[in-house]
Image 1: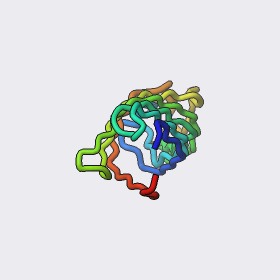
Image 2 (image 1 turned 45 degrees about the vertical axis):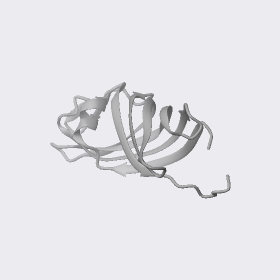
Image 3 (image 1 turned 135 degrees about the vertical axis):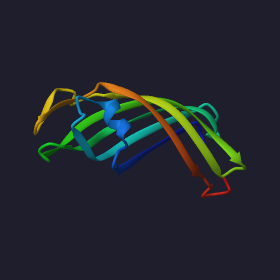
Image 4 (image 1 turned 30 degrees about the vertical axis):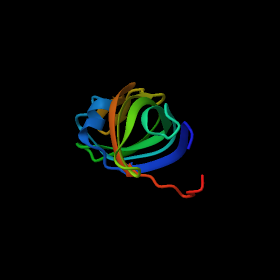
Length: 145
């Protein structure tokens, strides 16, 4: 297994309200229609079996589809972000099923200038606290190793 785990992930979601309140300022009259991202990640586990405590860095570009509620004007806002975080991966039921709570701080590295969209003037914040909770499973592909 080894201490390191690296990969690439992507997502496309209708974000919950806390994303707007955490990562945008003066956005009360805006709706975030979509949040897309492609992110690289690297985890370092203290144990070589990749259980228990770990540190992680996630980063990449993300795109927000912003809509002004008063005028229905919309635009895509592109940002680059980096999230250092700490977590713990626990296997409560034997070897395969895990739960993985973690916490990190997202730093916005671009696009924090004031923007005007329709009747609204808003800006992306410099960052904010994020909580993560993953549920998953892992299984060996090659049992001989």
